[in-house]
Amino acid sequence: MRTDIYVNTITGDIVLKNQNSLEEYLFEWIEETDLQLTAQIILPSNFDIKQLYTIGVQIKIPYTPIYKPIKIRFGRDFGGGNIRIVINPTDNSEWFEVHTRLFGLQDKILYASQLIMVSQDYYLIQINKGVAYLWSNAISDMVNINANIQNRNLLLQCVPSNNYRYPTSGVGLIKYLHANLSHSGLAEKLQTEFKDDKVEIINAAFNSYSGDLELDLDFSEADAGV
Image (cartoon, rainbow, N blue to C red):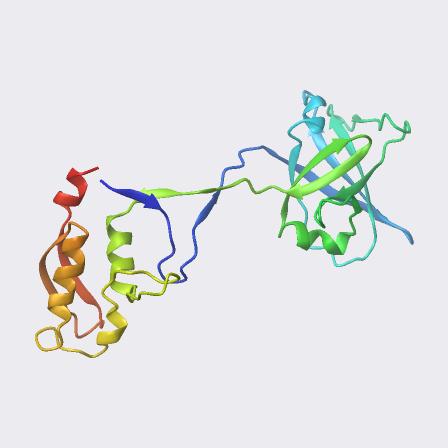
């Protein structure tokens, strides 16, 4: 069967899938002072601290409309209230300033109200040279799907044109709005366009209740060439 990149045929957007499989850890705000917000991330006792410096950890931060910088600490929970704090090696404190590199890759202090500019709610946090960098957790990739039905929908929607920005093939179904299959040339157009795509139309009919064009298609020739 033919495959293709998944496209939302209603909006025309390419559909992306988040491939991030990192485990999520608990994030919690601690305190708001006049100058900053403080927060902490709780990690399990067996957590490898090296991960903070390599792939980072995934967290969820609720929308926080407060224009103040953030300092964060990391604690490993050994149970019974015994939480051991990870020390910042650059100043021997327990705090890490939260930065981002969103704006032209320039290093910027991140304010809580700016979190929404990085991601809606899920984030990836990594330590580098004593600073906690916050990124979107999304690792996006395109999705491949069995494309016969998608190709059918796109072929029906596309209006052919000789303009390089637009498709050179397609039925352009919108041009036949309220048309009759028998007297509008639509039947011939359907046969021609789908034949060029190596798809045979066995039957075509308008559903007068739903307003849909119902097609019975044979994809065997198209699939045989894959």
